[in-house]
Length: 322
Image 1 (cartoon, helix red, strand yellow):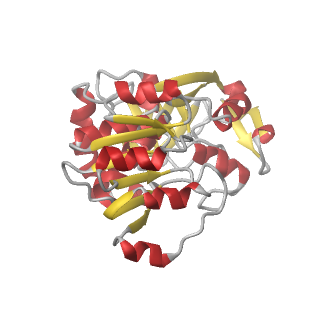
Image 2 (cartoon, rainbow, N blue to C red):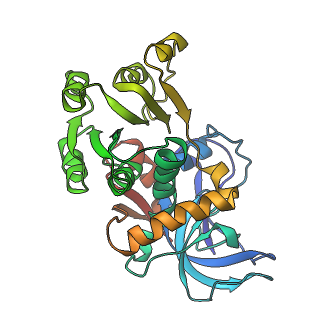
């Protein structure tokens, strides 16, 4: 099978298209013929060796994908060969075939195609765990979603609206704000607007109850200032790749909380995954939310896809096609 193999850490230049033996499923695993692969910033960080867990080389990148079940390992029940599924694995998706534990296979509503299914797992499950599980969002509260035109942003806007939250979206370009409005955002502002804080206060009165922080760096302090009393800052990423400073006393003034968000630990929590699936599956099946698919690249264009994501020009989920 064709696969992208990383033998040394670095940038897009270390992505090597090569031929490897097709894997076989071990007991409790599923072999999937990959149809589409979701490209995440976490994949880029893993290839660089800058992710939250240590990257061991050689490895095949890619943590989320969709495909059809090719073979079931011993002891796997409830899945059928030929079934379209989405999957969340730690790595291994940048290939024509991939094996994952059966517990990492996620149901795909019949109204979603393979491309939409590949854009589903990371963004929608992260949005749910951020807002519901960690953020403890309540109906009527307001959330500010940064990078609202991206994969996580578009998912978060839709999940937040389904939870009964007011949504303020920020993004770097007007066309991304228009996409957020179409998905249900109540207010949308350019992230570089010098009047952003004033506009958020005007729209909310005291500030937002929750803020999904993806940028970090110098903007971290601004995010704290835009929170209402008892507000919760959900730290999901640091796209700026810059350090942020925090004076704990600033949290005391308004009883603020700063909460770290990382999807990976939830994947080994069956009860948390079940709760998220029970919320998301009917929402997606009814068409009340839908993954936003952006540009697709062929597998041998993986380096170009990395560059495209790093340019921050993308909207929705960037995909690879094996």
